[in-house]
Amino acid sequence: MLLSEEDATSAVEHLARAVRMVIPAAVGVGVSLLDEQGKRLTRAATDEVVGTADDLQYDLGEGPCLTAWSTQTVQRLDDTRGDPRWPDWAWAAAELGVRSAVSVPLAYHGSSLGAMKVYATVPAAFTDQDADVLGLMAEAAATLLGAVSRRISRAGSASRSDRRWRAAR
Image 1: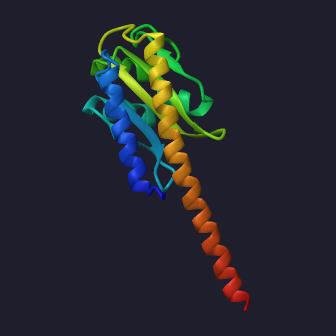
Image 2 (image 1 turned 90 degrees about the vertical axis):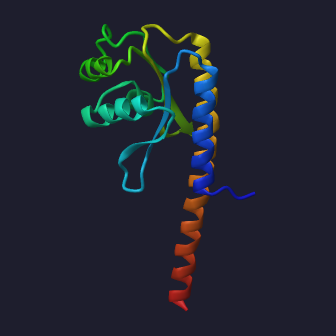
């Protein structure tokens, strides 16, 4: 079975909606990835607040999603009004109404592909079990995205090899 990039992206969007349904405190769920030019962007967002909060992270260069992505560790933020790790983002997120968040990395064979996150409008909204569920969904998303990326990369390598072989003849 061949899975296209569009199919994988669609599956990730479905996973984000599933997370939104199974984590009751979540007001939004999103997946951040790199686009073709290497720019960070939100590929799946269940609610407008996700895109806005994510854009703030990208613009400010700080936040739980970016840290989860770069360190490949779970980042839990219980209150945007009292956490010193990302002061500029936390202040701006609190102004949006985001009070807590959990971000988990999208990792595939040791490579960091992005992050999946949930946002809530109340402090300390997420439990350890919520973080575990988010982590499981992120693993599924990373597997889909990583497998498609690997297949596309192999196809590109095969195409380049074929062109070199034809040129050498």
